Length: 61
Image 1 (cartoon, helix red, strand yellow):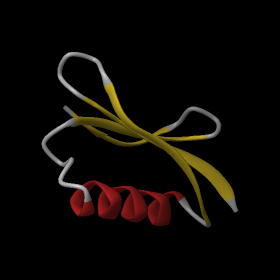
Image 2 (image 1 turned 90 degrees about the vertical axis):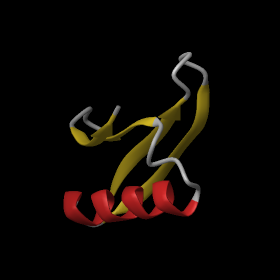
Image 3 (image 1 turned 45 degrees about the vertical axis):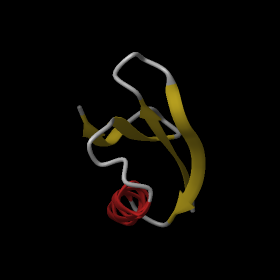
Image 4 (image 1 turned 30 degrees about the vertical axis):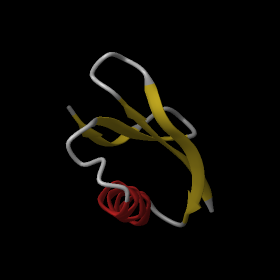
């Protein structure tokens, strides 16, 4: 399992959410991140999901 980080920002730069989670693959991490965004109605916010190595998995602005 690898560690991934999901961060959501307000347009002002204020951090709304910052959480880490584990996933087997990058695809699974992308799905988990997308699900968390939809559940919390953050899809219209600026967000990023990165791997522990810094690879960008999911991004929205």
